[in-house]
Image 1 (tube, rainbow, N blue to C red):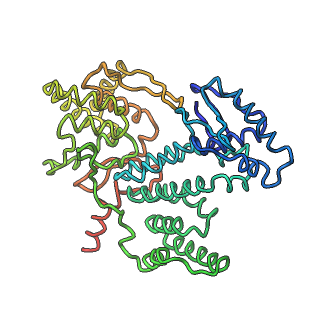
Image 2: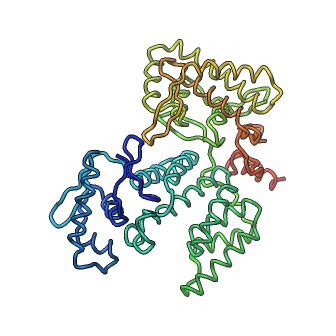
Length: 450
């Protein structure tokens, strides 16, 4: 059973909606219990929350009636509401609650070393929000009392995502997402500091300083305090034009996944990240360390890292490669050949042979695809493991064909650094480098040195 509390209350079983709680208070009561799955919620607390501290004399009996109705609705789906002592508990029986899924995705993003991985996790987490907590069952006062920490975690997730976007040079996206939040929370200093940094990197220095003045005035007027040291430091650096504000927090292209060195995912699309497993495109002589696909194992781990294959498939591929290293080497060469054709077709739309090579690879891939429904009820096409060691190549070919057929292909840009040449999506038209923390940073240093 799946319960969605981040927005209007929803219950689903096998992807289908289930009607639960015809009354607003019934849905609210179930929502309160689901926020603490596996933990007893005292009846007195339920009464206090449902009637905002002004319960009728019949409140305890009404709660018992609501619980009885909910049990009648949910028992058939394996959801147990037990009475324990002076309260009730929803038993932990493997049911999914979007609040818990959201918190786990945010925690996972905090553990990720790759900023692109953090952005992906936080995108998934924030996509779970369809509106305020229990939008059709609770008011703002009750939401604050219920779980103010959930809303706080949402704000933290947005801030973390913006910081990861800055590390990838995506300051325009960070600005677009932070501006509405800054208007809602004008005295939230960490949010303001991140937004000021994004504005500065977007050549909007005056806007960054104006934002600081507004925040400072509100802090002084409403709370009688000056901004904290971090926000003051950001303001000082903006005023001074400090080049440290132009640098990402981790100026490196490499991350470690399953004991393999992989490139950052900066492209914004798996097909572009596939092209970016080689650096220095267009150079007559290859750069030392330019090739990231050093062996089949790296190819399989990379495909799992960017989500082209799932973890089970990745481990199966690694097992097959150990058993048949000769075929694995052949497939690795096929992957590199496909990568070159895909890169050429993306940077030169008139390169007919390259486009035809990708089309042939995608046609072969399409014959091996299987439609699979995910746990969230949505479906997607996955390469069938019957394709053996060629699964990552088929997945990359299919992803490449999807991008070539998408209008987004016209926003693909190549990093101008000759040591790089990586591809990325530039929907804003303002992004120049694959990452300000690496190629952009090197260019800035070179200009200042000159």
